[in-house]
Image 1 (tube, one colour):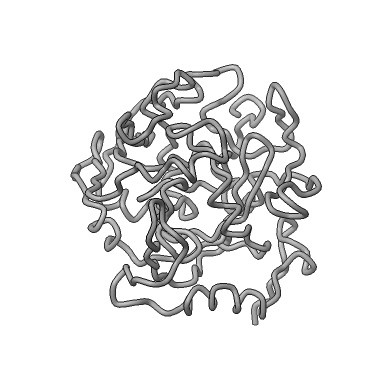
Image 2 (tube, one colour):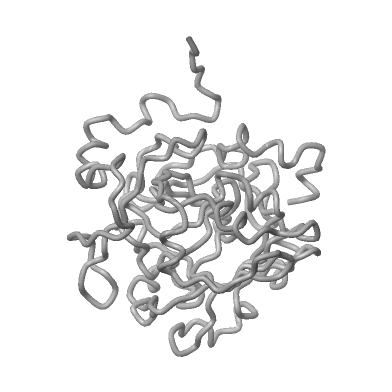
Length: 324
């Protein structure tokens, strides 16, 4: 018989949402653990931008080791009203009100570069590409705040495997939508648009790296990166690019948007690391959004955001203060 010993990064029992509270939360995500015949099922969800209701996105509970944390999930209202989405506004309170201009249908994602099977994927094809899972991940922003979000999607590796990257594919570059008619924030000069991000191929292929289409059991709200986004839970949140339109396999390390804008402050890897301060603030602690009001008391930041047992081997032998 196998006896599981909790890892040091796991929360204390006092921090874990009770079984009854979790099962009552939105009727346990309308019965998670049951797979619907279709990836879409209309339900009375939260209000969508511009009115109406967001459709429900059915998923199984994730069985991936390390994929689910037992911290209390951030309230839906907090997670959908406190957003960094500079394509709409640099004010975190504004994307929720402004993102109704984003048109998520039709939507396609181009997969290209150093791969044997490039192609253009329609959003509906991507929704059916692999079974959906709910994964409750910690989200840590480089600004020092954090959330816990139940995402819905599947490992990015499912899409990567279908593209069949060649031996030259050492990195994966991600590009997001940049349309001034839909995104008023693009008129600002805060970044050089479109927004680009990148991962090493082994990071992109890691099972924890998620291609997310929903959260809290519904499709992604526009302000959270609809209709699909990246979620890399052991890295700072800006690495998880929103509203993806292109995935490109490349041989050389791509330049990400924040590296280009402020190379003295943002590195390519951007792993959550309490031992490496940002030039303008410490990363040793964080505030969890929604606890005790908008901001909670500070809590210690976890190495790799608590996912060190799952991803630490990716960086074996690297100087994590140099390759930040």
